[in-house]
Length: 113
Image (tube, rainbow, N blue to C red; front, side, top):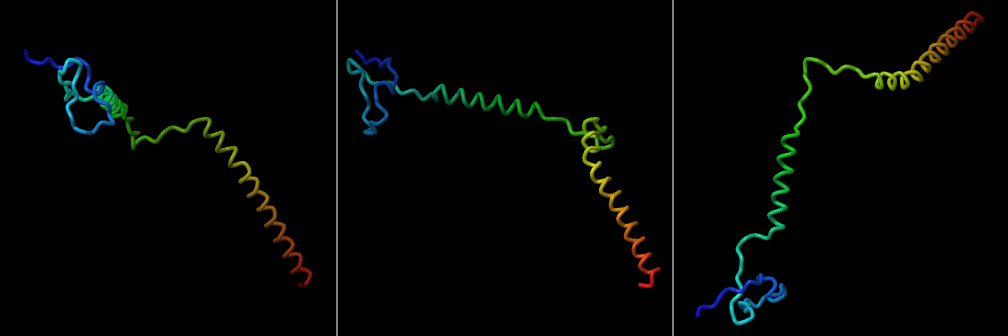
């Protein structure tokens, strides 16, 4: 009577720490069957990676039209105005100081200096 393969998985019969290379035996003397199929977890991770890669390729954004510039948005205009207000105020004060310095220089020259 030929021996029948063991129904238990190879890992259940042979602990991972046993590296002796001996073929494990199941109850009744039958040899354990090694499966050449990759583990389910590895297949699941490979399938998930393939689906994720396909999703990334499919979700590629379209580039903007180079002939038509994007329209300005109202929020950006408000932000730009808020940033430009102090700059414009500084330029106005600078102009007043320059005029005052010119007037003072002219007064000094008129006084004979």
